[in-house]
Amino acid sequence: MELSTAMWTAAVVGAAVIYWFVWVMGAAEVKGKRAVNLKMGSITRDKVQDKYKQYWSFFRRPKEDIAAASDGDKVPVFVDTFYNLVTDIYEWGWGQSFHFSPSLPGRSHREATRLHEERAADLIAARPGQRVVDVGCGVGGPMRAIAAHSGAHVVGITINEYQVARARAHNRKAGLHDRCEVICGNFLEMPFADASFDGAYSIEATCHAPRLEDVYREVFRVLKPGALYVSYEWVTTALYREDDPRHVETIRGIEAGNALPGLRAQHEVAAVARQVGFEVVEDRDLALLPAGSWWTRLKMGRIAYWRNHLLVSALTALRVAPKGVVEVHEMLYETARHLSDGGETGIFTPMHMILCRKPLVTPN
Ligand SMILES: C=C(CC[C@@H](C)[C@H]1CC[C@H]2C3=CC[C@H]4[C@H](C)[C@@H](O)CC[C@]4(C)[C@H]3CC[C@]12C)C(C)C
Ligand SMILES: C[S@@+](CC[C@H](N)C(=O)[O-])C[C@H]1O[C@@H](n2cnc3c(N)ncnc32)[C@H](O)[C@@H]1O
Image (cartoon, rainbow, N blue to C red; front, side):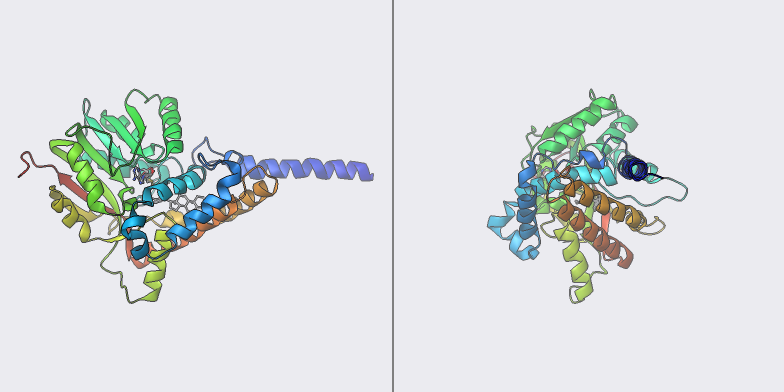
């Protein structure tokens, strides 16, 4: 074979391999987001690396420092930065629902995710004609599943402007835009009138609040008397020991890689709900047996994470993805390891469920 023919053949084969690697192997978990389209939310390309560094130096500190009054107020700003950095990577590698669910034998991750969301809708007895608030809605995976399942009108709130745009685009595409609304705002000061909702839910979102009572008090305020609220909380369990360095490393790793100002203990959740005025109807960990383990999906994804790492490194070298994406991806890889350690040891759960009711009459 002539040299030029060999070179052309190599070029064509190389291009085919890159195409296969990026567009076929690197296909989004849920069609729509691909590696070549990774944006970093509303951060401009040249600022991604700096924003990541700022994020990391804020959240890698011990929770006592983050919780200090002055820095506690900065948490929502850094949570917003976090979601600018990770939203596209989450959609690309996980899908439109940014949460875990118990694995179900014979069912796909997508089905298990949907059933976990529908369970929230059933717990608050959401039904057609009702107005329900999704506290910390992400790009709206749960909102669409819940609106479709229950027939209720869902209003989602997220601190991140980029997620609002993504959620609205997905709602329109799913034909659910007349029943799913999304607004940008802080769930610690919701822009909603008192007693304006028939129900509320939050899925793996209130863990970003520096003080759980602040978000629960807001949910209480916007609910009508008698209305139900369900939350899936990220907490440490009774098996967590502060004097075990491996436990501490796992929990610190989970906090730093997920923009958390400090995980709460499982037993604190119901006490906070009562403190703001709720009646606690049910309070239990949905991860406990007979539930299938939620962390197997993370462990099974390891080969895909390596492929993704090579892909983001190549795209950064080619200047398709902005500088900083590789670091963000590495942080997520690390956090996935801490999360599955937390699940396997049983010291952490992302699905402690609390179901509360706002009393018909609120005592003075
Ligand atoms: C509720 C929260 C988010 C929970 C999960 C949706 C995400 C937690 C860790 C994330 C991921 C870790 C590894 C990534 C992988 C390296 C990459 O190649 C593809 C995306 C990941 C799988 C990513 C997906 C989302 C998570 C599972 C928190 C923030 C309160
Ligand atoms: C892990 S995501 C979960 C999203 C969604 N519940 C889901 O399961 O797909 C957490 C969400 O909480 C939102 N959030 C965190 N802090 C917030 C705040 N102070 N105000 C409003 N939204 C907030 C984030 O923007 C994000 O949308």
